[in-house]
Image (cartoon, rainbow, N blue to C red; front, side, top):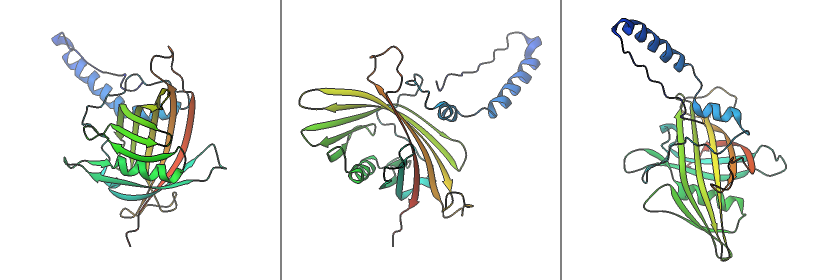
Length: 243
């Protein structure tokens, strides 16, 4: 669904060289005003199918965040469709890797979120030391949850908006069976003022997010893979006070 437009212009005859150049410039100008692929994906939610054109990350590839995510944040997460459910408060950390890129501290963030929800019988979590795209969580009752990212796209719209989309396999291992599902999570992050709608202080801002999540059956189970569960959440990230 994303990455489905590829443009190429081929000039074969000299007589069309000028016309071809002008046409190319016109197409590039039109492209400049096209909405981003992930913005389009967001607009059609919840009418999603499993994305077929998402880029598969390499073994060492990670999701790279803009510099304005750096540090530790207090996160408030509220499921939009369930106002009776209390918001989840947890912590998120973004750090530089050995290459100098800003990445999420996935192990820290997963632990913080899981412990804050107090559901699912979470005991511990470990990243795969060979890849940032794989993680293992130990649960109660001799259960394990294996998560592997199999698709990813990210777009920096401008210096204030950042959109990510990840498709992952989740495999729940129990002593009796293993259950496989696919989970897609698209999140649009925006810089926002301290009261979400206030004008931003460039050196002091929150990050507001809309998160869209769909759960699908395991790959190959259906010809057309429609979500079996959808969920939309609002996120607010406030910089942690170090005092």
